[in-house]
Image 1 (cartoon, rainbow, N blue to C red):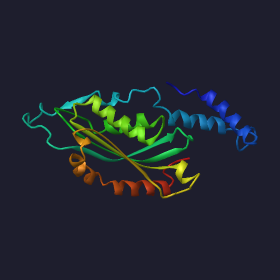
Image 2: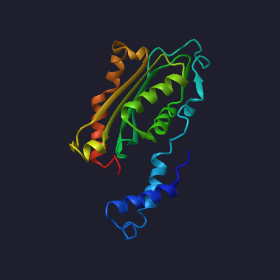
Image 3: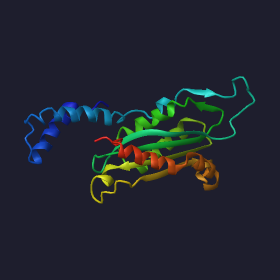
Image 4: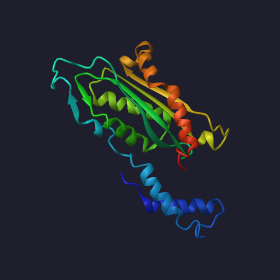
Length: 211
């Protein structure tokens, strides 16, 4: 579903007038269209199929070692993402860490960030975003377990209200065998949530959350 840019621009003009500004003054004249263009990017995932990037899988039993099946997890760390909180329409950004226990089929590693991109390009809350990523991977692959850890900074926390610039939010979503704490302990060690949170903090201080 394409974002209606003209409708967004008209709404932004109304907002500018509502806060006491003049939407026609030189500094703001092009702002409504700029916001509309930004929203078209921020919300490009609305109505898109997040499982589509996972449609092409690779059989690990049909390669040069057909009797070999994966015995451990596939882990992809530090996937950068940004989204917009649906409560205040303010950005949040950070890193996603994904692990899954494959069955006979694996997926190209480049597909996992695409799933994150589609699901984060919607009005979101971090708690739901992690669950949706886990559900998408679990539903599209013959994975025995899925683990998704998100670490992010939210501008609704860092820029307003309590204004806690160093506060990071970490969420965990687990499916299958990795829903058991003992089973995911090794994965959590590999993911090193603390490193991810520090990276997210660096991103925020460097302007990585956008605006």
